[in-house]
Length: 123
Image: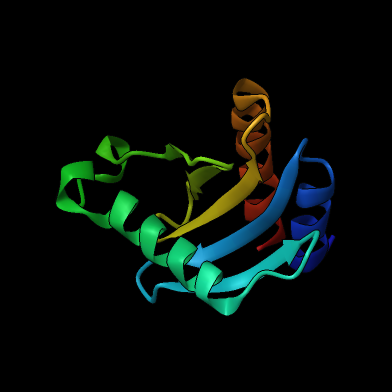
């Protein structure tokens, strides 16, 4: 399955999710994304910047080894849940699931871990 197809399938199988973005955190760029409705570029830029701040900031072990770094972070907004998952094989890359506020957080976390493996395999 192509990387793009994995992104699209990951969004389709994520309950209550609006968008899925794959991010290069060092470059602060969304490299690939899929969404149910069009998202403005500013939103994608913000998601990339937030991921970089979450995972590459010194507070999360940027000076430590990979086993000490955070792998997942969730932000609860007033209308949305942002679940960020760092890639295991490429620690400078992550993806973000943007979901409705009422989404099942535990189910999203499980989905993100499964999706991480599928994305890594497609790379």
